[in-house]
Image (cartoon, rainbow, N blue to C red; front, side):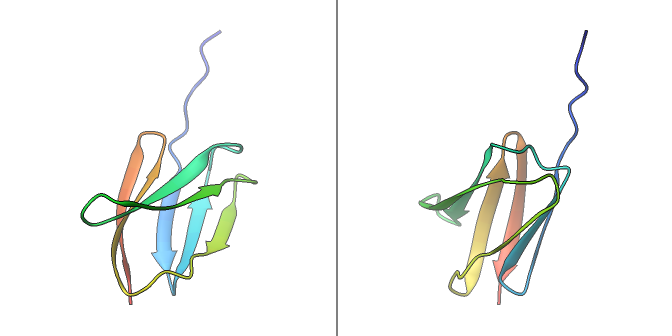
Length: 73
């Protein structure tokens, strides 16, 4: 049986990360805009939110094959 892969929806607002359809047990990896790994966060539920506590700037968020650019103001 072939398992259908659901793409997680990701948004960043007010220094908080929100995920829907997230793969539980995987990690969100956060990179600086120049590619340095900043932080890794384990996903604990399909609808997941996490306070980021990041400095102002532009970051890259990656979960499996899903990548999103986010701005922290």
